[in-house]
Image (cartoon, rainbow, N blue to C red; front, top):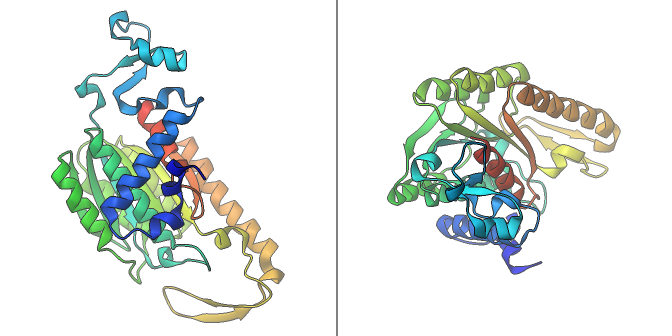
Length: 297
């Protein structure tokens, strides 16, 4: 593995002690990767540039970027790059799940949230944080000061999943709380009543926000490969059942795939960015999705 990719690996990042270091190294690894990738044209300079559009003055074209990408990009001015974002992090009970050898969904989402907050502030964008279970438990409104970043990182680092779940109600509460238009970035497994979750996501669009929904799932939640016998425990009720996973594996995978595809389809139909993330995926998968959304705004 190339050095710059080391800190895009969730297991490697989990070994680091300080969340600020985790966020910084994930971002540095991501940016180093962009500079080494020949096909990420617009990503080379990230938020400081945007693709040339008819009507732009030729004098603003960055010819150095053209030389590296063979595409025309103009340098943006500070007022063009400013963005207000809210990172919404699900800390409900189900997010605490981790299969053997993997980090939990909440750990993965918290590291990614921290990295995005770090990246946004370094790009002079305003970022805020919302933590929720069955309701909104923490709300830090968007600000762009570097000193504010540490308050966000501290809140993420001090948070652990609760034993409550209510994604749709919490997101509806958040949608009503945010008064100014911006970008809402949601990290959740979306384990709630499907229709209610989708309505909550659409609520942000009704308020004219841009939205990216990252669905974070453990690999075993996707393939159900738990072996010949397993003891399953409900992380919210503590109810336990003993089962032979292979007997229901196909039915389970069919149901999960249907759930995922329904959410994905409805998100795309309402111009909501959607990305399925496996907790073994390198962090750049989600950061690339954010980057693409950011450049469309």
